[in-house]
Structure formats: structure tokens, C-alpha cells
Amino acid sequence: MGTYNPAPYELDLNYYPHLVTKEIPGPKSQELHARAAAHYRGISGQVRLFPVAFERGQGCMLEDVDGNQYIDFSSGIYVTTLGHCHPKVSEAVATYARKLMNAHDFTTEVKVKLLEKMAATLPGDLSNYQLYDSGTTAVEAGLRTCRAATGKHEFISCFMDFHGKSGHSIGLARMTKFSGPTRAPGFYLVPRPDPYRPWWTREDGSLDTEKYLEFYDKFIKETTTGQIAAFVLEPIQGWGGSIIPPDDFFPKLKKFLEERNILLFADEVLTGMGRTGKYLCMEHWNVLPDVVTLGKGFGNGFPCTCMAVRKPYADAVDKISASTSYGGNPMACAAALASFEVIEEEGLLDHAMHLEGLFKKRMADWTTKFKIVGDTRCKGCLLGVELVKDKATKEPFEEAGKMVYQKAFRKGLAWIPAGHILRMSPPIVMPDDVAMKAMDLIEEAIAETEKTLLG
Image (cartoon, rainbow, N blue to C red; front, side):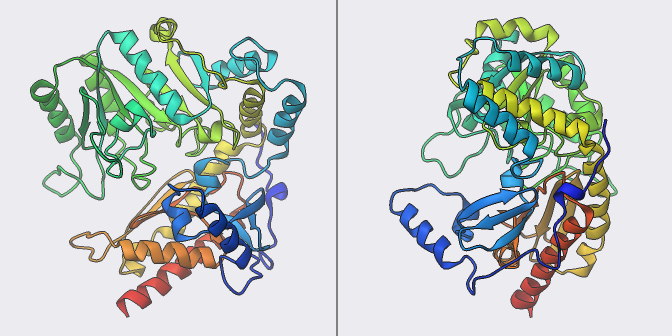
């Protein structure tokens, strides 16, 4: 494992963020957005709140079409974990863009090297890797694999988790924006532990993991047919607000599932590839999933995802027609292989954990310093700040969430909203001083919002 060197990622903080237009977003961004809106629907909430048009990115910096330059605290929504246009990843993609762009699922040397790198790097007996072009596709393949491996057909997942936007992947989540039924028969939702908003507590008010497991047991017996193939969940909720479970949850859940012959399917599309300081977030709890999906940072911006299966269940993959038109193409394999190599060569897992320490220290007093901050959380370079109207009732403060997001963006910070929860996913290559400058901007935006809304 190499040692982190901040030099390639440094920004002159006397210059960055660098804002040149009177209005933010600037006139060119607004004009482009208006042209796109004439033909394009379904944009994300973050774009609706701040319709900027980006033109280029480099490392931890994004530049819009008006020339405004921002610190990137979102990694392109959890994707460019190694920063924008990392030279090694860009060159790897360019090499195969000139050489061989697609070969269906035929074997190529770069694909073999990627498979061998995953086998040598990822934990435990994960032994079969199927490559795809989106997180949703990888999740769908994982569901088919679980059914083929167990002969069972039902799934349990968690409220507010997110697993994709097609067919059964929607059925794993409560997607309220879709019209009509969103879950097929045999797809069940249960609560997951949220230390800030626990459903069940001990006498001292702390979250009681055992009560969740007792509920799962009763739910399976009384609500399902008992044909549960897998329990599917994100190690840390992304869309739900960077919600981190208590440390005893996954070890106890894994034992609970093993006793009932139910597979554990961890959707690490968002949390994997170093985002939390480990290749797999589940490593933080020494738990190995039976099926796992990787994406987003897997190709550092190039559409490349993976569904991995433990050795005892690898034969099931032969039964699901696992191949795809684009998954595993040489450009994608080159991007993913380069991403693994960069993380290793630059010591980025250790640096992500180092940044976690800085972020936690910086946010430690926010719940006492600000009336509207109810909770802060952080694992590696995955952060969340929950805004509330009242700390006793914990009523969500969505107006504050929108305002803080927009104010920080206008100060030069590109990041992610989620209603009343502020989500942050800085590139794991970010130097310390840039990370702290970003936190300055967030802190300023929270203070200004609190003054505006509460006086």
C-alpha cells in the first residue's frame, strides 16, 4: 500500500472557490438549463435546486460554463471517488477507446486482470464477479442469483434504502414518486436501525438492536410465506441520509440470517471502493455478505459496476443469464482496474480514514453550536448532517436543508441535498486544507440559514 501525497490534488485556497459571475448559477448555466428543459424531464432534486451547467473537472475542482470554479464535495454524487479525470483512469479508458471499445462478454486481457485484481483485493471467499454498466442492473442480477442459489423467491429490504429504478430494484425501496404499485408480491420492507431516530430503545434511551431482530423474526413468521431468499440492504444509507447503523447490527443480523438460511445481500454501489475507508464498507464490522454489488466509484466515473458472489453460491450465476451488452467492455474494465491500482498505490484507504477523523472533530460541536443541527455522522468520506426544527421532537426542517444547500453552493461548494439532510461525499484524494475549507463553507451556510429562519 502506497502513501498518500496531496500534491496532485492541492488547490490554492486564496483562489478557490473562484466565482466570477454576479449571479450563481451564471447566465450561461441558466440559458443551457432552459434549453435542456424544453426537451428533458425527470431531473434530480439537486439540479432543480441549483441548475448549474458544468463544463470540466480536475481533481477536487469543478468548473461551470460561466467559469465559476467550485470545490467538489459530492464526487459527482458518490462517483468520482478518486477526483475528476484522474490521469491514470483517464489514460486507461482512452487506451481502450482507441483500441477495443466492446467485445460483448468475450474474454479480454484487461478483463482477466480486473477479475484477478478483485480476487486478490476484496475480502473473504468472493469468487465470482459479473460486470455491468449500472448499479440497478447489478442489483437485478444479484436478486436473480439469490433466487437461483436458494430456490426461494421473496426478499426483505429496508425503508429509505435505495437500490435502483427498474423493476425489482424499485420493489426493494419505498419509491413514493412512482405512480401505481411499486413492489411486486414477495418484496417486503422493514425498519433498520437509525441511532438518531430509533424505533426501539433500551431503558437508557439507546437503540436496542435485539428488538429489531425480534421484529424481523416475527415479521418473517407472520407476514411472509417463509420463502425469503435474501435480506437486501445498504451498509450505510445514501439517499436516506448517510445513516450509519450501530456497530452490533450487521454481526447480529448475519448470525440471524444464517440461522434461517437467508442470504445477506449488501448493496455497496454507493459505499464500496474506498468511500468509507475500506474496499467494502461491510469490512468495518467484519461481516462478509453472500452477494455484494459495487458501482459508482468502481469505475471513477466510467459506467462500470459489479455483482460479486461468495464461492458457495457461485454456481447459481450459471442459471441466471448473467451477461450484458455493455458490462465488462474493455474501457470499463480498464477504468475499474486503474481505480483499484490508484487506491492501492496512493494509500487512499488510510487517507479516507484520516479525513474521517478530521470531519468528526470539525462537526463535534455542531449539535450544540447550531439550533437547527440535530445530528451529524461520518464514516470515511461519507457524511451527513440532519437539520431539525426542534431538537426534542426531531421534526425535519426541509426548508433549512434547501437553504443551506443553495447558500453553500453559491459560496462555491458542489454537494448533495436530501430534504432536511445534508449529504457529503468528498473525493477520498482531497487534501486536508481543502476539506476544512469546504467545511467552513458549510458552517457559514448553516449559520446564515439559522439566522434567516429563526432570527
